[in-house]
Image 1 (cartoon, helix red, strand yellow):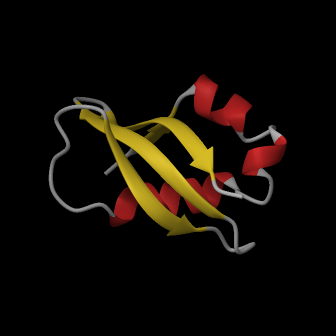
Image 2 (cartoon, rainbow, N blue to C red):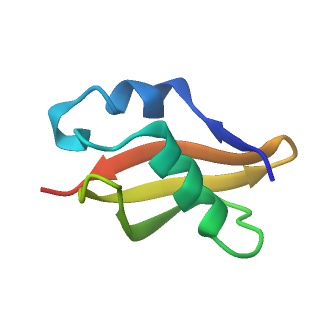
Length: 74
């Protein structure tokens, strides 16, 4: 399955709160999610390689799995 990361999500990675979260971490987390996600849904508790905990808001589209935003935890 193809993972599409929105420009908004990429922009959020530059914020201090999301520091330590890489695109690869997001892609891996999105691919872990089982099943079909028809509407934007928040998934909690992913851990980046750096140790930073983060949440994802994801939705499945015809083009692939769309990562709408990333929420880093303190």
